[in-house]
Image (cartoon, rainbow, N blue to C red; front, side, top):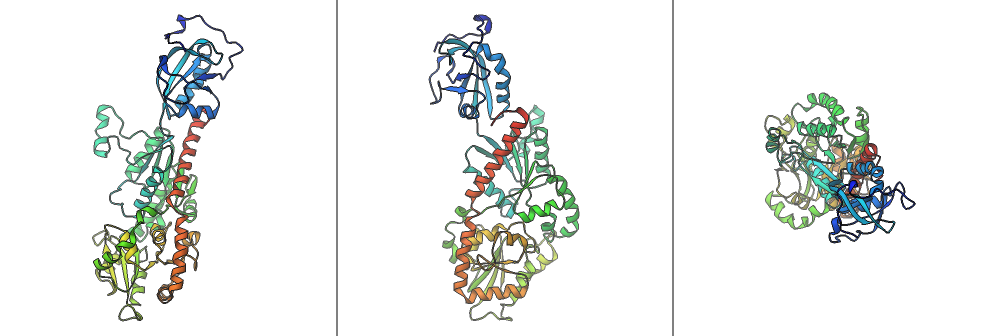
Length: 487
């Protein structure tokens, strides 16, 4: 290869296309001005218009050289490639290289660099406050799952400078408030998420909204939530409809949203369970039972204390096993691991139950290591009235706790009564199920074994692959629609 640099077509005789040239010629991937070979692909032919070849080009920082006599024909296709936001032009110019016709020729080159296939903003506003909620856990699972996916770069905050306080000062310096991203994935629907959604639309970038919340499961969460729920339903219908794709935890939730109706495609995907985060939970059993003064068989649940989660049922069932009920030969204690409100936003049911609980019920409040809950407990009881999936139930299954669930359509979608759990509908049914498990270790062991198997089908590895595929498909579809570039 020659090392004479030519700065324009005027410096060389104009060559005419010949039999060696065609509309999509082979080109050489070469170092600029005779620089050192850095990549194994350099010097090998690349055919523009061939998706596999273009993928090779996109994989490295390379010089894409085009025979000068065809540069005018190929400049538009190459500019189309550069509009693919995964490539960025570093420099262009003219250079003498060896072409596929095996002779010295002047070529037009463009140096391009690649970055990950998708830069995804996975955003949860109020993340600190929602850290231990189901939504917070789901967002954490998304990010951890995507860490294992090739070609996905995850950013967690939309604000340029790393914080909203830094971002709001940027317009004074003529800078953008929101960071650059290929795809936005919002896990909530508040002002921050709305700002991200508007930015995605302004930039014409794909927008995913994760529907963790419906008006139905918002009811009976806080004081006044029943009054707010109808207005929330209207807002959610509007906000969710802004998305290019809605993800939700279950087919049940999808059907709920279709009934609103939400005007966007909806795709169910499990929130998953992080088995690695639960590893070693068994070692915490004695510590947590001692910390909360738990003895005998412990029936427990995990999560924020809401009436909608089955608070009244949980306490009423516990009374059946108190000293005034029939506790049997071994005491049965009940523990609810999770934070609760007693202030102005708390519902009267929550305030009354947690301040004056049955004698055999413990409300632990916030716990620093949720593994301790699954270690201290023996039977997981979840009498929730409305759910979109229920991550904590999956975590209990992953830990091998026998699980008792309310017989709801969303649970029927994932679990099988009598195989990996017991399902009940009434206080009497829950009471009987607890007694069965307490008196029949064989049944508890069988449910535990099958529950672990069920939890493995919701592993983060499976969620990772599915989520990464969705991201890539959306971004590639975006590119095809706007550039006609083969991917």
